[in-house]
Structures are given as C-alpha cells and as structure tokens.
Image 1 (cartoon, rainbow, N blue to C red):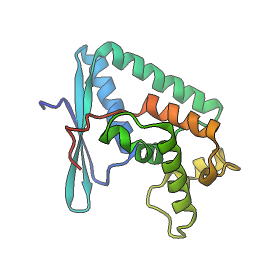
Image 2: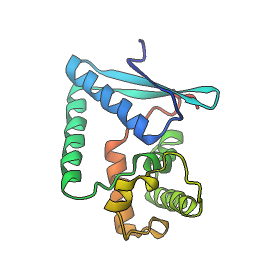
Image 3: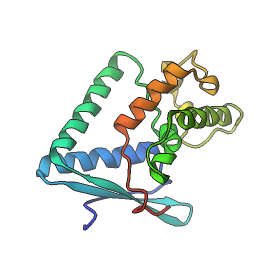
Image 4: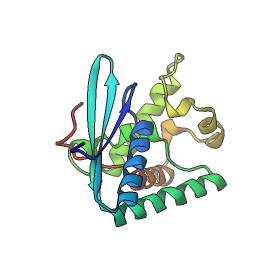
Length: 171
C-alpha cells in the first residue's frame, strides 16, 4: 500500500489499537531495512476513520522497539506508567497542533478519571476499568493525579505512543 503497512480494527480507534499498529509498523521498518509508515483504519459507529502513522527510518524503528522492550521489562518489575487508551486521548493536541503540553495532558487524564469514577455503567474499554490497572495503581487517585506521577505518565506516553501527521489523518 502507498501508505506502508495497513491495519484495520473493527472498533473505535483508541490508544491500545494505535499502539498495536505502531508496533507492527516499527517491526516492518526494522525488518525491511526501509522507512515504512502505516495506516490504521477503524470503525467509529458507521464511519471509517483513518490514521496515518509516520514513516520511520529503520535505525529509529530499532531504537523505538528497544524503548518498548525496556518499558515491557520495567513493567514486569513495577507498574508501567502508561494507560494507552487514556494517554492517547490526553495527547490529542499532539495530533491536532503539535506537541502537547504537560498541563493539558494532566488535566485531560484527570477529567477521564473523574468521568470514569462517576459513571456506574463504565466506559467501554477504559483503562481505569481494567483489573490489572486497578490492582497495579491501587491507592492512586487519578482524579487528583499529582504533578510528579502525572509527569511520568506524560513522559512515557510521549516516548511510546506514535505522533501521527495531523494533516494526513481523517477522523
């Protein structure tokens, strides 16, 4: 495909699905020795949404895969400060206008936690509902997430999640 690797998901686009497509794109670039991008198609209601993932140089792909492996290993010893679905939503400015600022990320993460805390039905697929997240982060109130921990979540999300080209994707 002209965009590179193509992935399709039958549900609404979220950080977990984007991260899966990004990892596939990194592997494709690293294995082929060529800069490869990707395109993720997802269904949002009856509409098809597209997200273009940037082409990445094989050396950079190896580096990003190394960071993901290091994060996975770290997550085996202590909770990994990454909530892929919520972090993807909180990094929305990266996709719209360029790099997000920390304050916006922290505020958006708190809002998502607050909405989840006051929704007895639960948001479908919310990271906060995952049993592993609830156990790993027990005692942490994400509705009032303090600056040092929120900064860690921000830095990890920026390091591991892709920053797609804002002009190339369609909602």
